[in-house]
Image (cartoon, rainbow, N blue to C red):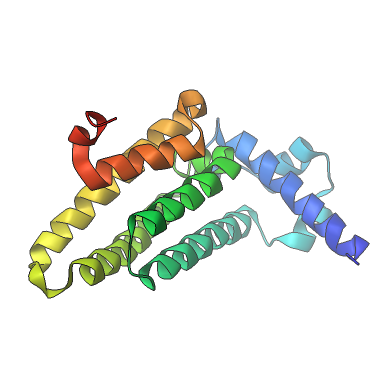
Length: 194
């Protein structure tokens, strides 16, 4: 049985995340106050402080959760021999996670978001993707080619993701995963085959 206390804590934290997301659409994170956020979600400031030290602590916890989920997914992918099915499942899971947190991801990756988190996220994605590509290609490819391939793939996937977050009606998570997979596997010639 779920503890009602846990449910209330989760509900309050979700409320705070929604409120912060709304405020970050128009304000830089460093300009948002606890009072402003508490007013936005209609709670007392003391309730906020039961969960977080300050706005930056809240954002850091949100970012750490997102980063941990991404690391876990990328490590799981790296443990398998990458086949088309495994890659498409990974892309589907990734775009589904982004879709489930679309507003939050959008503001965290916007100019109002935390630039250090954006760098950290790119670094995580880069290092894990580099490992995956290196494992997949083995010793037959020079390391500098793996670096270039990794940079190219990450820039493309992040570009697709940022564009999608600006207009989520572009497609479903499944369609986004299919598009990313097609580009990874075949480049723009992949669309001729469809």
